[in-house]
Image (tube, rainbow, N blue to C red; front, side, top):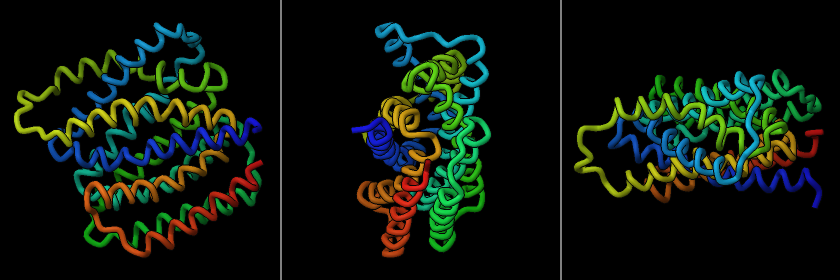
Length: 288
């Protein structure tokens, strides 16, 4: 098995893990403040990162890496979790999830700007088609949705795309999991810990088990374990090409939303995701 194929496998596992993030966040914001949820999940993942770094004696970043780590932290550790949590106060997870199909396009653009990658023109054609399919589905599915919630999701896609591309570029130097799964979280930990104390609820009475489980999922899997696979996939298979696997995330996420949250998922979803899968396969073919 060649390195690029391994990269796609690792990336696919990461996408499966990330697919549960928005449904879990939707459950959590039903009983927790989105600002507290954002800083608390980052603090938990940050403490885990400190432990892993000490045990494995991970390579330390250089001073020249700090700016990149800050960009990763602002985009992926803080920006995306907070903005999606705010969006999910207004819209269902089923509606919000389809916006995630725009991530590959956002990431590919920043990969060109920050990572120096140059995918073929055909790659861009299929990337745009796949993203338009997802955006179109969000539009036609969005009766009764909040424009403010949609705005939060669009901004979250931009900052996450920047964070992913910056982290994938840096992962080639530090190692795939050390970027977001450890050093970016460690860099954020002092601020997240202080904000967690400040925003900590006065009482946890009445908090359901589902909320506790969702908090554990977004803290451990969404903020840490998923990135171990994801960044390894991006660094081995290429930021722009493996990033197209993110187009599959709405499919898996909507299935979880339907099963766990009992949110409505119609036949249109099947047609849209069939087209998305085709675009992913085509983009992979022309990624180099």
